[in-house]
Amino acid sequence: MKVIDIVFALICGWMVNWIAFDILESFGINFGLWRWLLSWVLPIIALACLWVAFVIGKKRLLVFQAAKHILIGAFATVVDLKIFEGLVILFSSTASVLMVFKGISFLLSTSLKYWGNKHWAFEKFEKESLSKEILQFIIITLVGLVLDTGSFFYFTKIMGVQFGLSFHLWTEFSVIFAAIIAAVWNFCGYKFIVFKK
Image 1 (tube, one colour):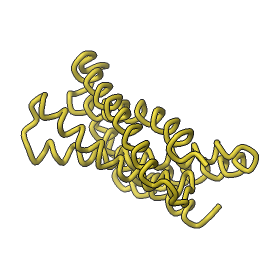
Image 2 (image 1 turned 135 degrees about the horizontal axis):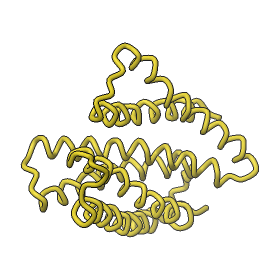
Image 3 (image 1 turned 45 degrees about the vertical axis):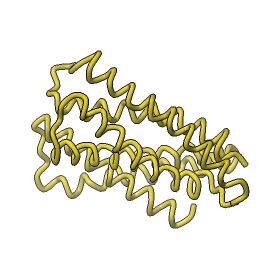
Image 4 (image 1 turned 60 degrees about the vertical axis):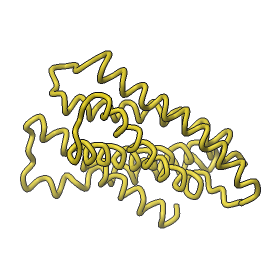
């Protein structure tokens, strides 16, 4: 594994910690001084999983690429969620405006995914037919945007709040669920179409 793999795995683990602690604290679970120690658990798990994927990836490259794609997706999902929350805090949050905010946060986080997937997960450094690659990326991303915002709409407006959670917490989960659905589509599109070698 390269140094960038180790560093990025640890950063992604810390980013996911940020969301995990937010969710747990909304349930009234407070770790106090243990929070600092526990903040190392997910980064170490992320690094261990990436190492396992690296070992398996020596025979099946797809596994290592998928693991890196998942880490990029986790990082981008945290960015997606925090940008979304920031927009909601700064501006009004009517139902129609929430969809616009979700679209903006998705597009910004997807720009991070492009760079991460191209240069880290799939390591495609060739620059031939860059315009074709960008067009393919935009098409895959737009379909991902429809899946992401459509899923978000389904979870928040059609399903509605579930399991006795607060609206705020259910909205956070909906952002995460929508990102997972879009991530599966994006991985397949990026791997087999956009960054295909």
